[in-house]
Length: 257
Image 1 (cartoon, helix red, strand yellow):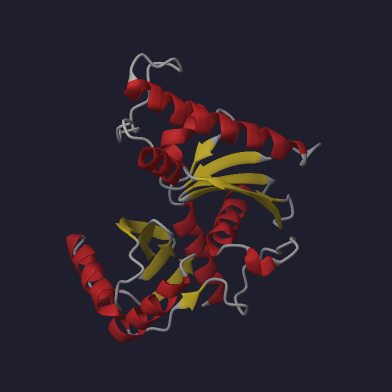
Image 2 (image 1 turned 90 degrees about the vertical axis):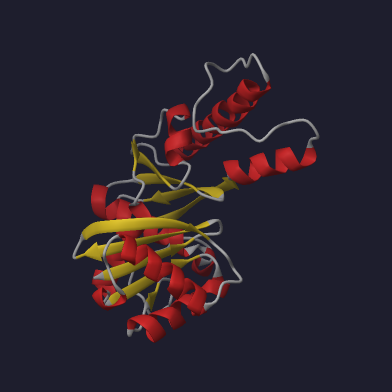
């Protein structure tokens, strides 16, 4: 089985594949100071919940935007799983996706992985909106080329900044939407500002970016931990693909193993 590891700034998403099928997945908090042995203990526990074991894993692929954890996961793979992992963004890796920007080395691994997965699935021009610590907009041409994008602050860090800089605004659950954009109390006003506000930002950027694809019309898909929360407030998003990054890792493993 293949273990796919997507290391983000806030969370790590792990997926276990049997061939091309994702059989189980987990989301855990990213801790930059964690050790190889601590990670191995956590991974062993997660696998046991699904009646899986270290010996079931024959391959590992890692996509990371947190460089300090790259070596930790590589050591885990070699010490506990007995395999040499593939690390996305190694210059030797064949992604099949030409990167047509000024400095290709600047692009985060997750953005390339999502582009590979999205184009493999849809085979057309794409805007991929990834709702993570940052909100990224990644653009793929009809030929499968990565042509650039945009980066905006994520909802979570923006909310954290707001709460830390104000004395009376409470931390609220934003998983349930407000009744409408005009809040009747502090909680609904916060929900309105966050959900309608970020939805409007995303919708506006999608429109601006789409204009550069003309006369083609790109398909707009979303992924990331907050995608299902914000997507209803950005009507241009056609589909939410929560496991897009894991799917991209599996595709890249098959291409490079």
